[in-house]
Image 1 (cartoon, rainbow, N blue to C red):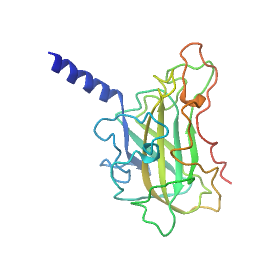
Image 2: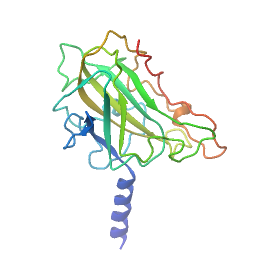
Image 3: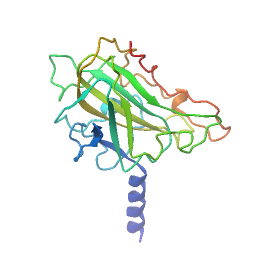
Image 4: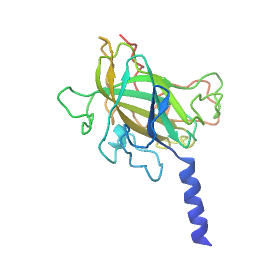
Length: 231
């Protein structure tokens, strides 16, 4: 009986978590997991990253990349959450340009190379723990638009969902993330920034990594730099 109960508990816990394992280009999701998306360490458990100082904050990578998707600047790029984003909190998107002479399949994106391309954060006030406050909550697909003025080239695109349901204390936030490999075409002459590193962009004490059910919050600012303005 104890074994059965434990197995049921583990199954329930895994179902409450999620992973981003496929992208959507041109409105069509990939048919297989881990194609343009680098396989993450939670490919079996769906567990999130809890230490913002861990190198897992970069891409949570278990295996090197195998393919690269092509997308035009100014077009939407989506990520599929398996089975859905089951914890409330913001969803953010970062991009890092791969040096021209480097193989995208093995590039690690170390250092100040990431810029924030988009953020789906809290709306309204006072804030709740429901989908009325968090637009990405309970969604199985999330997307952003590749900035029109981003230079052409190969990029790692990093999606992160910051789960705040247990973030009353420092270190309680759970971060679900992965990196997709994309080749951006028809880009512009923008200079993305500010550039940050992972780990390094977040501090465990950042207000955006904390959540209070009471007193009820009236505002929220997601961690990390400002979204690039496109210039």
